[in-house]
Length: 122
Image (cartoon, rainbow, N blue to C red; front, side, top):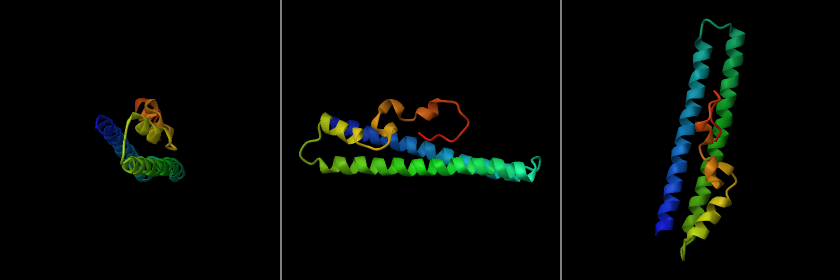
């Protein structure tokens, strides 16, 4: 039972990280709109800056989609372990996901701990 509880806690942490990334995506798009409405910038500069911010936001959306698919895969694999869900089974589920930040706990949310000025992709 403890292993299942730990697996559910890990899912909750990863879902919380997904929520944080989604907020960053929305902030990026909002920032792009602010740039477009900034009368102090030339039209060309505003368009270029906004385009860059929107592209970063779209990359983040792709990453969020991958993250959600991996979380769903982990949940599906966990639900199939009807007989026994021990620590080895739990490790197998997480280690076989396609995103490193889900498979390797030390990478989860790493961009939230780094200053870089762009939308977080992890």
